[in-house]
Length: 184
Image (tube, rainbow, N blue to C red; front, side):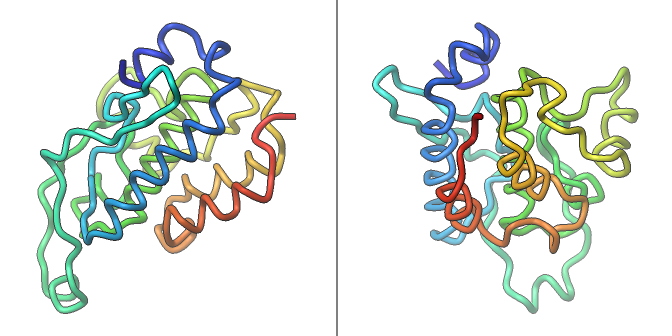
């Protein structure tokens, strides 16, 4: 099953393995980035979770090669694509994206894994996208007070509105995650 299906069955059942799922999903995304690709549609639906603990990243339909510095300087707007509940602000604006756009989406997914719902929801598409662009980052602890303060702070950084305020790579995120507990 994919991670979204497991979340829909109840997040409490996932808590014993949540740290491992986050780590393995991050490792898969990190490997994809190391190959020079940006996924652009990171969401729970695109991670398969095996009963023994394996996690696989799937659905590369929106993936794009990382652009070089020259292409980023002179490239125009990108076509806005992705899943609205997980799209980074720069993706919504049609700006060029790098690994940090996937990190934002990964943060949305982790927020949902731990809290039961994506960080932002809206009554309309416009409302949802505006929240990604302008609303304060909702604390995961509002949905799950068992998450440690330290991990909640790391998760908040992944959801920063500006890419430069996020961890530079998923490997950086995973390195920090190793130094803390996810749950109290």
